[in-house]
Length: 488
Image 1 (cartoon, one colour):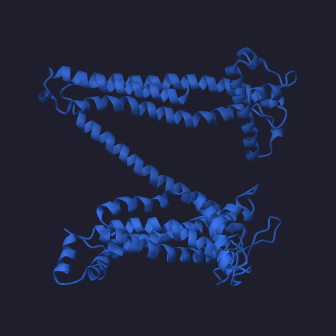
Image 2 (cartoon, rainbow, N blue to C red):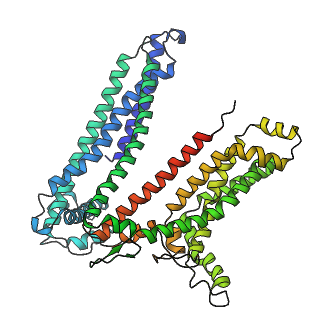
Image 3 (tube, rainbow, N blue to C red):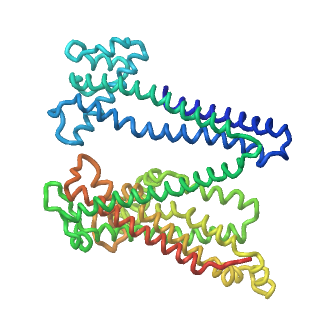
């Protein structure tokens, strides 16, 4: 049975347990809710959680452990001569899994019988042709050890799936029966349910923290490996970026950091005034009907994929700037459509909803009594906004701008398509430049040797970018908390 249908069965069993638990509690109380310690729904929820959580945890654990156990068993069939290291073994195992899936598909479609799939031989049968008939394309003929490993993989997977089905359903059923057995009118069901919900919330929060720690540690370890083979002084203070997988690379981050800073500065110069003015208009001047239409339309920009913005920069903004600042009929300042200005303008458009939405919410949080007091003292509306509303909302607005800056620093696709790939130090905003994120992508594209500094430098770049954006976020939170006004 597939994991999906097994999960559906566990959910159905849990729902049935909810109904039975509620009925059992009501029957024990003689149909009088006042005799129950908790509301009837809590008794049902207690049985539901006792059924669903053990079954779901076992299912998740099984799905994680089973592939590792099967790979360890199947790899014994593969001769050592077929691979050199763990990476090569993973490639062989991917072929094994593909052949195993093809055999399953052939059996399901009737191209092979179950006995035929088990007795298939690479020496006497054209396995590649058989699997090709059912839509599984293989790049080369199937070696005998790959076929044997795939057949063993199928057998172990089938056995593991049956054991998983029995185990998950058994654990869920035992949990359901035990919870039903303990259900009576005196059971503190509400306390149990709230404890489970608190544990689930704590687990969700812990998962987010652990994920962040996992990302940080993966970057740290590879960054340490990079600095073992490349001097940190040349990385942080070098002004030349010339990676060469043949050796002799110059991997200075300064030109990449300069391109990142320059493009982000232009983007903020576009996004901050437009976004802030839009927020002031929507919160202070626009009527309810205009606001109900304009605010969602403005926030549509936040839902556009960044690759679309990149294409917009490449096909529209770049040629438009070339017509004004280019060599052909323009001012001669721009050599091509990909430039810092191109990426900065488009990225600024992308950041407008980040600034406007956050600023709008912050301005709306300023109490109306402050506006009324200012207007009552004779100030005009514009004076009230300038001298009362904006100073009160300034910490939140600064925090919104800093969060938008961290978003700009981490952008990739707009830079790749709009700014070019040249790592240079230049003050001309119409020159092509690149950023840290774009070079992370380029260094990890292709067959990279992760023991070489040219590949490991991507992790050092990522760690540097992570520290910068983390610092901006912490500074934004500090500004908001330190200068935030507390209103009653």
